[in-house]
Image (cartoon, rainbow, N blue to C red; front, side, top):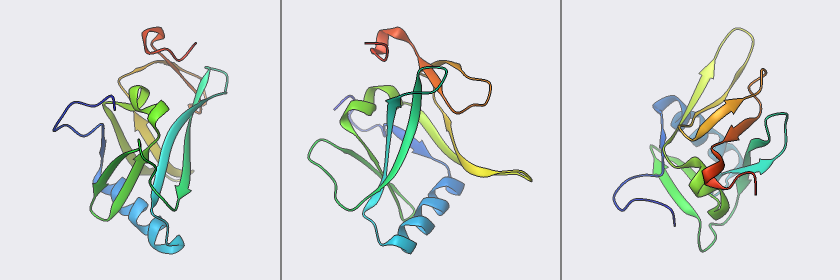
Length: 121
């Protein structure tokens, strides 16, 4: 919908692909839907949900057994994002390296997008 022909809207690191594939096998889901919603101290938050079916205008990215589904309203905010999975002594989780983010809260849970993308509207 907002993509460039021949270019994936998001990239998935091998660690993230392995974790997503592992999650998909456990629940027998069609994929992992990634989106954004209003919330948090910076204004927006990423969302991740299991889905059992791909909808008509969803963008689908498949890699190494992982299937990421991007909701239509989130595509312009996520274009160019790298999805990684990091493990440390204190926590493990998905990390988004998004070139469209202009600010984030101190805890890293919420983000702010460039106003030209329409996140504040």
